[in-house]
Amino acid sequence: MMMTATCDDAHTIAFEERGEGTPVLFIHGFPHDHTLWSPQLRSVGGHARCIAPDLRGFGESGREGPWTMDRYADDLVCLLDHLEIERAVVCGLSMGGYVAFSLWRRYSDRVRALVLCDTKPGADSDEARANRRELIEVARNEGAAAVAARQMENMVGRTTHERRPEVVESVRRMLERAPVEGIVGALEAMMARPDSTPDLSTIDVPTLIVVGEEDALTPPDGARSMHEAIEGSRLEVLAGAGHASNVERPAAFDHVLIDFLASLD
Ligand code: MLT
Image (tube, rainbow, N blue to C red; front, top):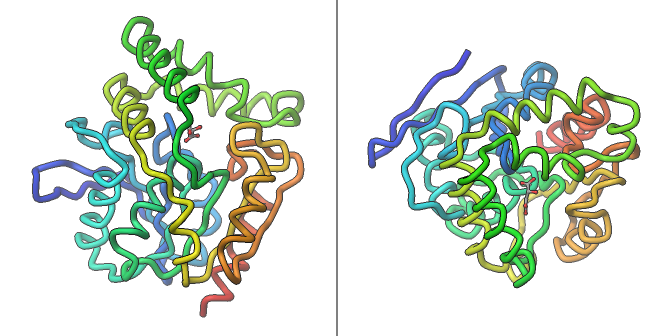
């Protein structure tokens, strides 16, 4: 069931919550919504208090700009306040990981542990920014379906494209329903995001890094570098999964996450 919280600036945050115990805040990527985490709400929800919000501009959350990673992080801390949660395990996939880095920089005392999935710490290159400017034009002129058509090739891995058509279709439907304001806002926020690499050595909470072996957008080599930079972190490479590893290999992903959560007790 969807619920809502209202922030100081009258912004509405929609979220789904399932389960009891250690709070886990699940942050979706681009251009997703909270349903990215449906498999985890179902299974990890039996072990922990799972909270999956729609980021500003996506799903049923409010759509007011301006858009920055810090603002997404502020929204999520407002949600934690609303739920009276002091510290949560923060689990972000791809752009959700960029938000997790911002959350760590601004509110490290609210972070019990980090789960960094299919993400990377670096800022955009000039080439990446140029691609994002082009995608903004595609979103404005042709809509979300055209953006989805461009993103789908690398959104899931080769094995999923070949063998799991139902997963491909469900991810495509999620991308196609993203609001254009949210797509454009997130692209602007990603273009402007800072380099989080210097922050990695400051991370002193338990950290799990998960990456799909076939992830072409944020490949395993980058995850290995993050693992080396974050002292004591754990790295899991999921075979047969690409960028959306949590929906491509949900049982393997959940197993790793539940095991990590148990290690926090
Ligand atoms: C995502 O899945 O969130 C995006 O691929 C991230 C990005 O474009 O940098």
